[in-house]
Length: 107
Image (cartoon, rainbow, N blue to C red):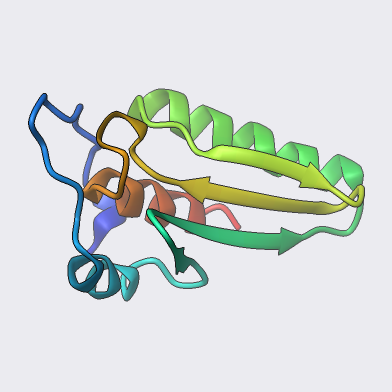
């Protein structure tokens, strides 16, 4: 399944978050991402601060176009941690994995 070709869709009221089994199954399509609680995350290291921030800006462009936004942490001047979860449902949705797949394309 090529999640990077899909588009994020707003979660409607009453949407239930993925269970752990579904999340693990979808994690296969988001290489380099790990499951932790009700979210998935990845950590990346860059040559320098400028490259880290350039990557963050590209992630921001993708997030805006998809209407689905990760939590972004820049630390130790060249590291970025991205965490995806669907806050509206307090858990994971397919949108989190779609966004992860799209982000993987720009790593």
